Image (cartoon, rainbow, N blue to C red; front, top):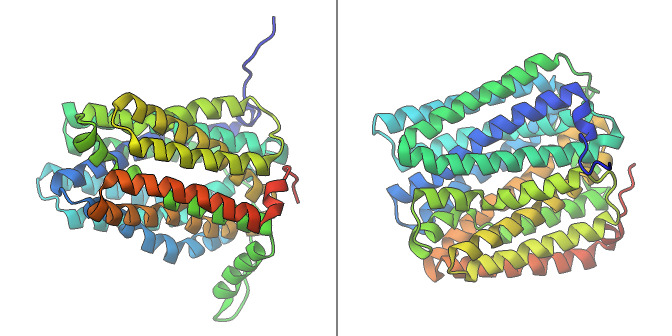
Length: 411
């Protein structure tokens, strides 16, 4: 009898399997906290700009520290970098829990701790993404990123759903405390996998050595149009379609649901993403990757528009789920393109520069969405964002035709 499902090849590699399990648990905790944080802000303020300001708190650290984060990932042991950065993130979660328990929490506390968390992420994400190609052979790298996407989306289903239930039954501070505990899973995974070989970037001499190394990473991206165009696509897609920050407004004021309904609505994108990641994990080779990538981002924009016009909970959930499905396809292909096109010695710097695009886009998008919603209303902010996303795809497809023709070839 034919078996339709098989163990994904990347999970046959023990060290990647450990990282994947730790990531799954840690992401669930982080997503639980993220959506709870937005709900918390909505309770403290009824102004849309207060939600958009969470993006402003993240964008500065991302732009300033991401380049240095990539350099650190290339020059130091990536496992040790992850130990340090995840410890900082655990400390911020514990601080949020303590401030909320003592009823001393204020908006400025949330924004300040978000800044600290974003700094840690700016160093941690390049280390984690650059570590993955050191754990699996090149042939299994697309599958590894598919599985990482599945871990992220599965955690993003469990996390938001738990967020609503924990807030409703245990109280807001327990969300932050449970997130702090979730980091222990990643610490255990890093410990069990042991030392990981990596190609350490050579350190130059002189006072401008770090700047020279960072500029080397920027020049590498500018010299590779496939990587550059995928990053720009990532930025505009996430900038124009960042509806997440406004979700508490849609849940409370437009759809009229409570914390539990908000929690499941927050998980909707991840429901679609998890199902899609499971399907993609069974596919060894994705053909015509450039065309599939562009089509997936157009789909993301279209379903963003549908979400903006919806006034029914079921349709809003479906639109968010299909946004998540579309984003998963594009994310897998984007990550595969960049990692296969980048040598190991510069991979951390490439990832950190990319981090500015794929994390900076949503944060700026949240600021933009908050401003538009403040003056024109939340639905119009989301609808115009979806249309802008589609327009950006058309411009990028014309500007970089090589991306449209990309088949999946490595360097």
